Amino acid sequence: MLERTGVPTEEDLAKVIPPEERRKRGPYAVFECFQRIPCDPCYPACKAGAVKPFDDINDLPVVDLDKCNGCGACVAACPGLAVFVVDETFSETEALVKMPYEFLPLPEPGETVGCLDREGREVCSGRVVRTVKGKDKMATPVVWVAFPKASCHSVRHIALRRGVA
Ligand code: SF4
Ligand code: SF4
Image 1 (cartoon, rainbow, N blue to C red):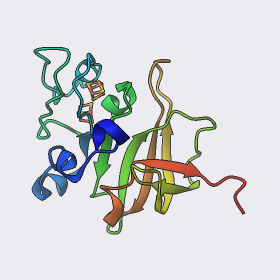
Image 2 (cartoon, helix red, strand yellow; image 1 turned 180 degrees about the vertical axis):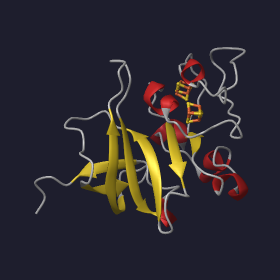
Image 3 (cartoon, rainbow, N blue to C red; image 1 turned 90 degrees about the vertical axis):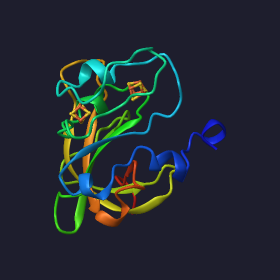
């Protein structure tokens, strides 16, 4: 599935979504990086030491979620747009996801957006909380989006609604 469509399976995702006990403790990174390729910018980006050193640059990242503070530096550093930070403790009803966003214009804080799943289907509406451009011009902008908690493991992209009646 992943090789043909770029969409991970439930089995793939089960390997990277942490157990409920960790999810309840605060924001955590989800590395949806499933293919061995020569790539490792997530390792130096993580100043918390949560991404373990790579023995081989083709290795998949290994993350210690007890060290992860949800800062999102790895989201901005990943050229594969494969990393997300999920915060299920954001509010009683909403989760916050920090997601890479490589399009212009960037969304503005307070803007209502469509929240899309990994296959591009809109599953709910969301609210942009913050847009972080980063000082490094190689960094990918990161958009913080709040939306109903039940969709926190399916929403991975947004669509702007500007100009949509
Ligand atoms: S979110 Fe921050 S602390 Fe967690 S793995 Fe990414 S860079 Fe490290
Ligand atoms: S930077 Fe992104 S694509 Fe590269 S190894 Fe890390 S998570 Fe995977």
